[in-house]
Length: 161
Image 1 (tube, rainbow, N blue to C red):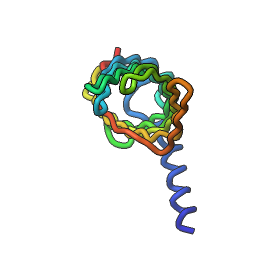
Image 2: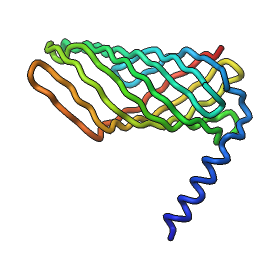
Image 3: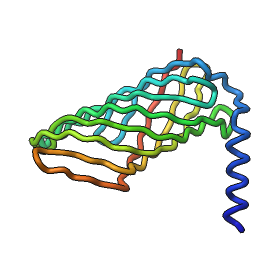
């Protein structure tokens, strides 16, 4: 019974979200993201006040002869939870290419994520994202490694046009 009550409140919360104070439809942003040894740039577009898509390019370079380029596309549903504070829930796909301890690798991952973003005026924002990975497949030579349940946290900011 308690699960049903929580589900009803969650559905009501999501359906009431389109009442945004911020006018985001049509905005385009460019930003930077950092997550551990990974850093990169992200391009973001709001197709409506409640729907966004990101394209990101990340690079990992470590001293153990590891260099990886990761390109990804993510889509999300956006809702304003507090004044000037957005919650985004979504998912995406990342492709990776590079070297891991000197061996050539390539692969992909599928993940979900949620993040909070605070709007600092009309053009700037800062945020944090938690991204649990659902599935990853990495191939090096004839060896394929799969993983589930790994995640990451990232921080970043955007400049919106």
